[in-house]
Image (cartoon, rainbow, N blue to C red):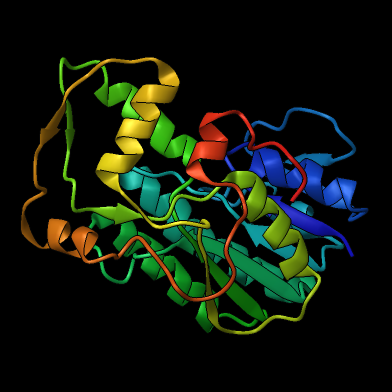
Length: 259
C-alpha cells in the first residue's frame, strides 16, 4: 500500500513520513520543496497550483493530507481550501481508496478565520468521491513551546488562566496515523488528543521552570466568544484515543520515543 503524505516537510509530516517508512509502508512525501532521505520517495507538487499533483498521486492507495498554509491571507485559502479541492478531484480518478485529512479539534466551536477555512476543507473531503476519514487533533507540544517562547520576550507572560487545553505530541499523532491508515475509511470525524487536560497557567508555569525562564504571569482574560469557547474546553476532547506523551515528558525531552 503506497501512502502519499502531503505537507511532508511540515511539523507533523517530518515525523510521519519516516515513521510510515519504518513500519514498512511505501511512502511518498509530497511538498513544494522536497528534501531528505530516510527511505522515503520525495516528490515535488504544489496544491496551490495543481502542478505535479497527478504524478504525485499515480499508483497511490492512501493519502494522508497534512498540507496547510496558516495565516498567510489569500494564500491560505489557495492551499487549504482550493488545494484540498484539487487533491480530492485528482485523487478520485487516480484510484485512491482512502483519504485521511488531519484537522484541528475545536474548529467547529472557535470563531477564528483559519478554523473556518479548515471547516471548508473538511466539507470538501466529506463531499468527495474518495472514502475518507477526518482526524481532528489537539494542539502540538512544540507549537505551544514556540508560542510561549515568543511571549517570553516580554517582561511578563500574559495568560488567561481559565483556558484549558489538551496538548499532544507529534510522535503520538504520527503513530496513531500509522494505525489509522491500516484500517478502513470511516467517513466520520474522529478526534485525538493528548493524555491530560491542563489549564494554561499550569502549562506556562511548567514551561518557565523547564526552560529556566523567570517571568511573572499576567492574568489577561481573552475577550468575546473566542475566549468563552477556549475557557469552555473547545480545544479539548473526550472522544477517541489519547496519546501517551505528557507536557512534562515533552519538556523533559522525552517526546521522541516509539509510539
